Amino acid sequence: MNKTNTTIEEEYEKCIMCGEQTNVLSSTPIEQREFFEIGCGQLCLNCYLKLRDSSNRENAKLSAQIVNAIEHINKN
Ligand SMILES: [Zn+2]
Image (cartoon, rainbow, N blue to C red):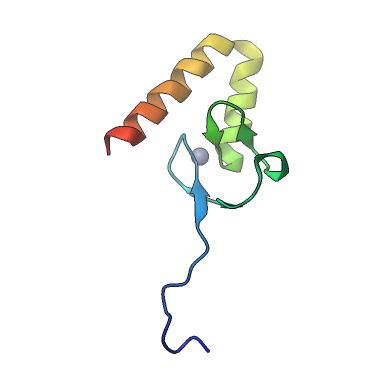
């Protein structure tokens, strides 16, 4: 069954902050995703917790970090 098609892989979202692959399939509807920031993107558990922690203190800084991360990814 897997003899010929060796590259059939589900596509997983990558964390927008650290680039780690998450366990969220890119085909997963946003409302069913965990650790998804509306307007930002998919986060891994670690970054999600980090962001939640920092957003409790300083929301503006958090947004700037996300923007930086997205711009960094877009450059590559
Ligand atoms: Zn991450």
